[in-house]
Image (cartoon, rainbow, N blue to C red; front, side, top):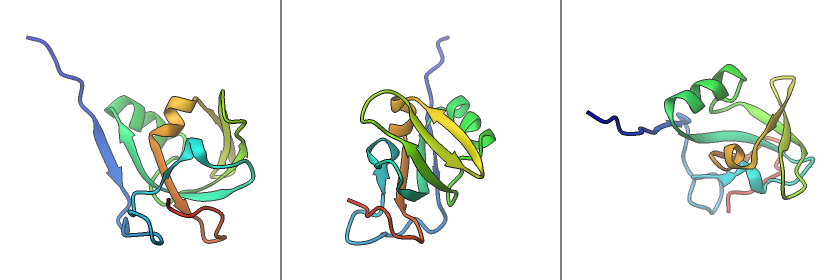
Length: 106
């Protein structure tokens, strides 16, 4: 018997529309260096989501993008910890405007 790859989705309890967009947020990989955002949703397999949660990436967590050159790893501060994420990992993290108002849902 073969096992299928499963994917889980974690959604914020207040995952309503952020602005005029769809409410799903934008990919973390598109956020510019220096911008502050809030995690809205994460998608991926169980192992990936567990690893992110252990690093502090949970819906509602605020983070600041320290470095995003448009290619290569993205460095963010989350819960007072600096974390480097691969671009593919960052694409699975959907974020929205932080209280400070840095990013709009697109």
